[in-house]
Image 1 (tube, rainbow, N blue to C red):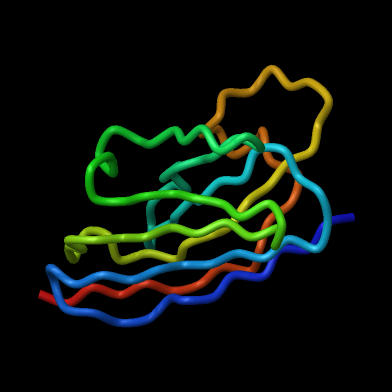
Image 2: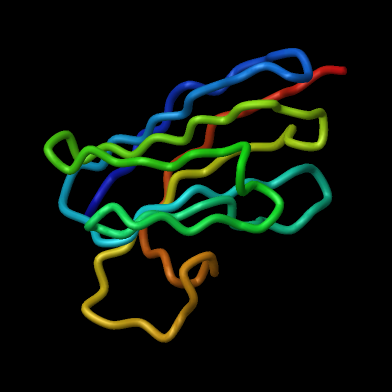
Length: 123
């Protein structure tokens, strides 16, 4: 069982930046960030393979940067040029399946989830 602990959320004004971190208690393959705003479905933000290859949702590309430090079992999400529509609970996710049929930014792919960290962007 892998536990995930997120940190780094908070409140910023539009145009500001935040950096989220997520520490895993064990080995993982893909790690990802999802977000969920009130009354909306959970959506994929970005994911990163065990070898550091990133994948971004189209609307996040160019503003968000995902990275990971395998020595620390930690992934990061640098969020720049934040807008009020980025306001959501952000969740860290990870998986360690041998194989999977789910896409990289599909929530069902991930078998471990953090508790979430709130990001609020004011205009």
